[in-house]
Image 1 (cartoon, rainbow, N blue to C red):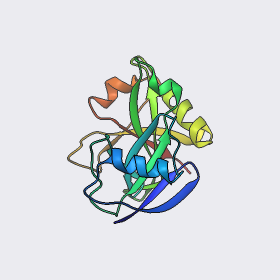
Image 2 (image 1 turned 180 degrees about the horizontal axis):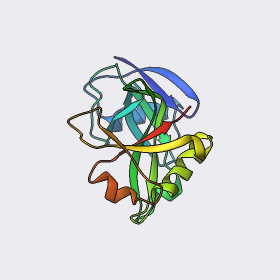
Image 3 (image 1 turned 60 degrees about the vertical axis):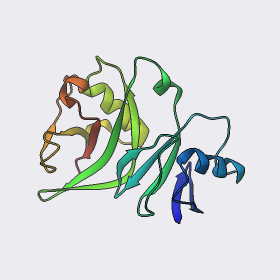
Image 4 (image 1 turned 90 degrees about the horizontal axis):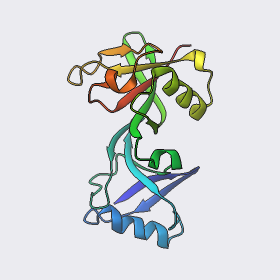
Length: 171
């Protein structure tokens, strides 16, 4: 099965066997000089600009509709007191959220406020912090129910077990 792989600025089509776990796919990618052997890497599946699965070495990729995204893990995200969160970029079109771009991960500390997370996200994306707000999904079952976080709110308290932030751009 052919899948699309994104690593750094490369977009590659690569043939894998559905019966091979990620650790075997990773060896093939190293042997083909697509990824380095000596870096800490994060493997995850992206579909329609949202992270749908963070992969472990024994996980399988069952379809070719998703993109296998591979990122080098920043050193600050490897620290013990860091919580890793998914970030999805979005805008609003009428009453509907439109997701775009490449989703990514940020690391936050337990006591981190929304304004600090906004700064990390704006630095990563390269946008003005004034044009960015952070939303969370109020109800995982009711998908279109979002809440705007205030700058002084604690991110982890607001997430209440969820692990995805929405970087909402006001145009």
